[in-house]
Image (cartoon, rainbow, N blue to C red; front, side):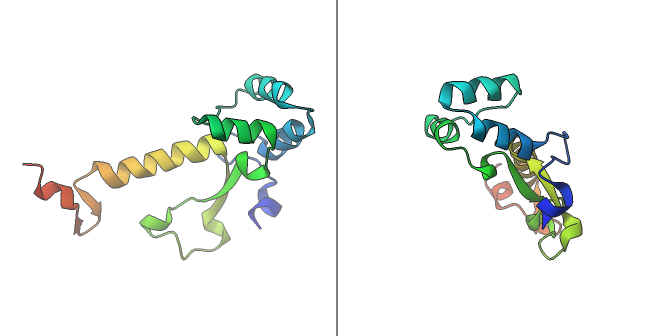
Length: 122
């Protein structure tokens, strides 16, 4: 559904992740795919297994995902399509890291709920 609305274009950086996937998929092998990904400024996965998978058999979900604009953990799970957006994998990774920092970084995990770590930090 989100793809039908946004066509695989990242709502944060504007990367046409679907077009990049199609371009990478059409290339003949790992060396050409690696070159094209680097030329596109794509940030490669951190594990060798994930890089190998991306280069050997690229899948569309390696390039873009549907994301909740308001995270499920912050009350965005019961929303409709208006809370979904397309993010390229790099922006999705950044958003997930920001969300994790918010959840783990403050003294309260959610409004009115104490973060249990505060009881042992003194």
